Image (tube, rainbow, N blue to C red; front, top):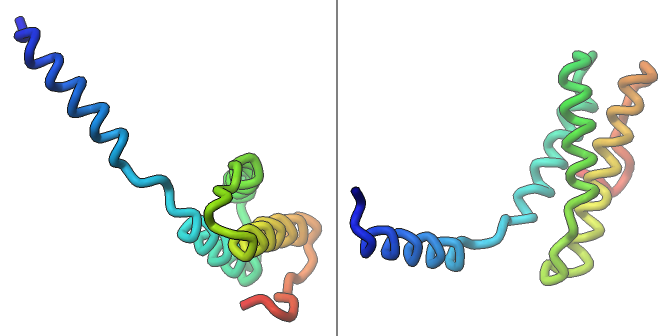
Length: 105
């Protein structure tokens, strides 16, 4: 049987680890969405599985509450990236060609 002090020590370490774990980096999430949008726009076709996965990713990104400490510029960039991915998916479903708009990389 595991000694009681070992269990208490494990709990203390677990709580300390949770406290010191940094929050997710939303800049990386935004950059991922921007790269994904470029890849979707360049793709000739998308499989139904890929399309479903991307739609779930966009839905999760929309539901995720933005962190207010990142500022308004980051929130605008994030919103544009989400909409760009959503528009690219919609265009691929409709069979249209997708191009980048001015002001986007």
